[in-house]
Image (cartoon, rainbow, N blue to C red; front, side, top):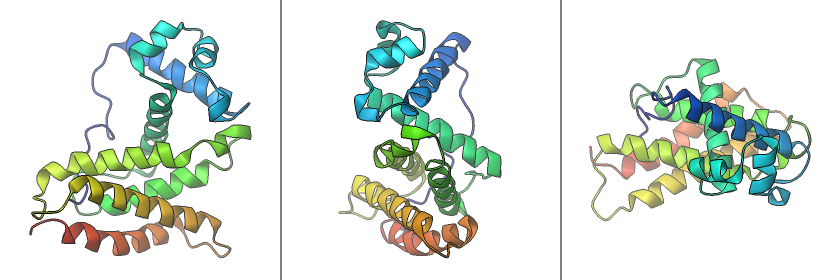
Length: 196
């Protein structure tokens, strides 16, 4: 149940460059719009217009604006993880890497101009973290009677909540130290949910 090798984080699979360009344009458009207004005030048409694409192109890539926000969060998270040189090549250290990535993600978000700092962080980054756990779960047997989705959600919210608390601490420790603390709290829960 501990995280390992999420295919979606370390590398982008080979996808047609035109698809990647359109997705990047949509993500960049949403990021620009979030500096001007709240996520709730932004429509799919606003995003398409800002990206100089049509609505049909938007819907070819994303079913709704929340999916685009999640894609934007995943891209930002991936960039932050890559900048630190973090690896998900094994279960060992994977949870710490996720916690450190979430701390970095939250630390980078409030400093953004205007509405970007107000975007619905819970909806975006928690879904990304849940997906990482989901992808890594294939290498672990879950204890009978344990709902893996409940474990993924609980662990993701625990990491997010602890990182959010860290961000507001007056005498904040380093992100690395906080990641160690988060790992010490969340890892036993994940280990308890899996068979050894």
